[in-house]
Length: 239
Image (cartoon, rainbow, N blue to C red; front, side):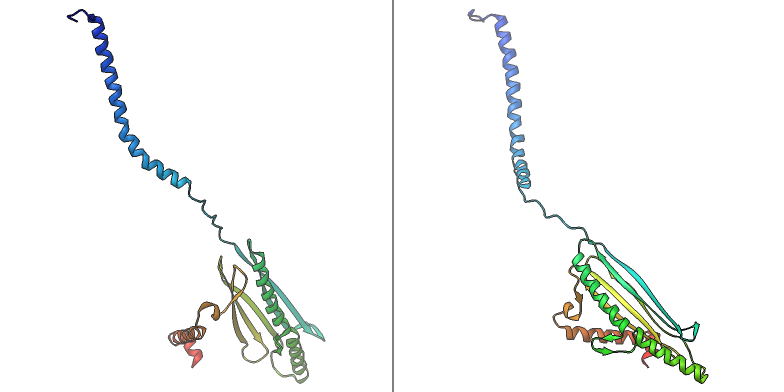
């Protein structure tokens, strides 16, 4: 300025530009730590996007059990108003959403159980408590009472009810309760339970629940016996 190289106005303009450039450079330098901190985050995001897609989870299968009721009645041959036999039973019909083969396998088994009940055949053994076996007994009983005048019950009966204890994505549990009356003071009550794997329709047994089914059977028997001793109703029946 003193030597006359630049004017006062030029010096003022230079100082203003230097201040502006310094501020911009400082702001640019300040962005470097931000870029450094963003680098790991960017790596993590890229790693997540490169992960394989998760396997879809199937929703639980819906298990539906409907009960079909069958009632058969037979009257005396010489008196259409005199009932001598009532024979009724439940048939469970299973539906499993998305598992038709499993449902079909279970329904095949329950159909076999129904056939045994109706015919009175358990395997190759005739129990005498199927429909025709009980009908023969009821007709013989009616003839005896009618001809002798004995004061005995005339009506025989057989009933079967099916209860669903559990029906879900894994297990189906059915309990068959039978009551048979063929005279006397009271009838006979029987219960059978069947448990199925609802994934494949197979019937489950003790062998499927433990590697040592014998030990499991012993444990269950001892547990039930102990429960019977503490239950007043069951203990009275076992005396």
